[in-house]
Image (tube, rainbow, N blue to C red; front, side, top):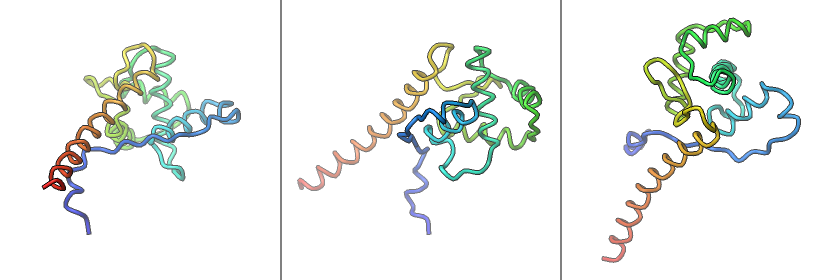
Length: 152
C-alpha cells in the first residue's frame, strides 16, 4: 500500500561517495560506469548497459566535441561503437537522465544541466546543490512547523 505522501515526491537526489581506484581509472567504460554509480544514475547491481552507452555518448560530445548532442548525434555515436539501440530505449534513458537532474533538453540538444562549455564537474555540482538546497528548504519549513506545534 502506497502512502498518500508518495505523490508529493518530485524527484530523488542520489549521490554516492565512492573510491576512485586505479583499476577503475584504466578504461573509459569503467570510468563511465563509476560516474553513473556515483551520480545515482544506475544502481550497484545494474545490469542494463544501454544507459551507460547513452551517458558515454553524451560525455563524448561534451568533453571531446565541446557541444551538446542531438538524437541523431547519439545514433551516429552508437553506429561508430557498433551498438544498436532502438529509439524507444534511447528516449526512455534520456528521460531518466533528465529526471535524475543530470541532463536537460534544449530544443532537441541534450546537454548536462548547467553546462555551458566550462567545467562539467562544476556544472553537475551546481545542479545537485540547487536540488539539495530546494529539498532542505522544504525540510526546514517542516521542522519549523513541527517546532511551533511542540511549543504549543
